[in-house]
Amino acid sequence: MDATDQTAPDLAMIEDIAHQTRAALPAPWIGAAQQVAIRVEEMADPALLSDLGMEDPFELTGLYDGVPLTQKSVMDQPEEPDQIWLFRRAILDEWIDRGNVTLAELVSHVYVHELAHHFGWSDDDIASVDRWWE
Image 1 (spheres, rainbow, N blue to C red):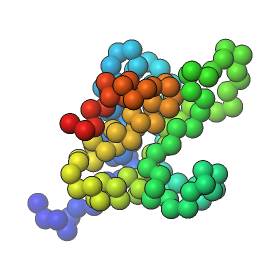
Image 2: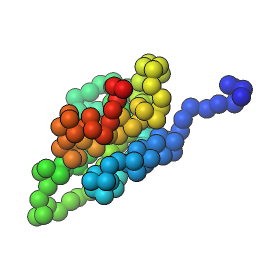
Image 3: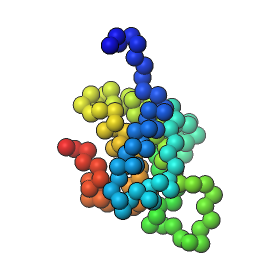
């Protein structure tokens, strides 16, 4: 294969990896995870970064936007669906900097970390799904 024919992973590839990660979740989590939209953008919006008190868009690889299940009430009227945002350029930058993980491993890790905010998972819960350190 000629390296000059290769391109960087696009938004669709990052989204596909996140969908594959969701599909591979253990049974108790899959149904609720499917209720959280997956959104992939090139970079975090400057207004979002400002809201988070961040300046460098490369520091934000993902974000959970919603109300965690541990805080939801049947009386709540949702304005928007819960979403997990993945930021392609920041993910690719971290992937290159690390150099010791596959793109799928990194995207899965970011996705599971953001999903943990939705579920209110502890570190042990996260570790049961994402064996990142192995």
